Image (tube, rainbow, N blue to C red):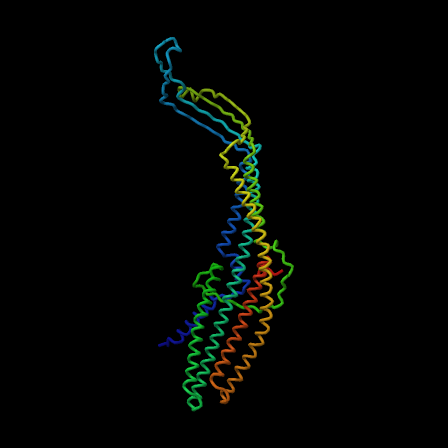
Length: 444
């Protein structure tokens, strides 16, 4: 009988291969490209932009000729009589009933209307065009915000994962130290307290490891949401070498930032809304024309074979607003307030954007300097750890020296990792506020 072990091993190997094929490794650029294609919120933003284009065309329609074709057929099978005084017909003191109209009545015609002067409608068309521009800016802002959020979640998840790996290394190092101390204890040169110190150290490391792992999955799930990936999908992140020579122009102009452009456009819209409201004080003029055919008979056969009488009319309509209960006056006052508010928003944004840019620039410079110093500090801590380990084995260092050296190594590695993370975040903040965040996808 054939042994099942080779079959089981083959099956396990095949499963591992399938899992490896399913696991996807993404760089930052690949994550951003996927988000730009699959993110549902960005799709909604695109639809809102399309809807703004439709609304612009919709605002034009009232200014175009309005033509209606109208047709009507009526069967007056029970015409009510009308009572009139008999004095009109030489029968004083009597009431006479007469039937007016015909049983069958048909008409066919068309009505044409055209606005000649209507300031509110004309300015509404301009308003819709500017609102479409605003929708385009909002879409651009949503795209830049999506790229920023993907980059932030990517760097946060990656930094947390690297801290998890560091803790795994620290736990492994602590395990090896425990074995060393237990060996020296058995040989009579170490005490139980030394082992207990390391066991407490390892327990604390395990707690930190679990916490870091939970934070990592939190950031990873945030990234999956942005990429529109299922929560149970496998997503692996690939780090890239950090470039400390990133060029960031110091000639910052807040007016180049998309949020400032949006505020400028909102100010323009506030002014247009004010003009639309003021247009309500002006007269409106429209022209109209209509033509129709009419057929009226008491017999259906006569109605079908009868002739149709024609008629036509044309004219002009003038409407002059005189008094509307002061509603238009207060509407204009409200729109004036909106214009003033938008001015203050622009002024505030100008100062805030400039201050934020200066803060992000300093953060980038500090992080760059910190990376260099922490890299040196990390190397020194590694050398110190190796030296103290050798001294402990030789009996010239105690367990406290060993634990302190291990903690110093972990702290130096963590400080370096945090410096790199701060640099990354300051970099994307600068790119976002400078309007160049999309260069993460398409470098200039």
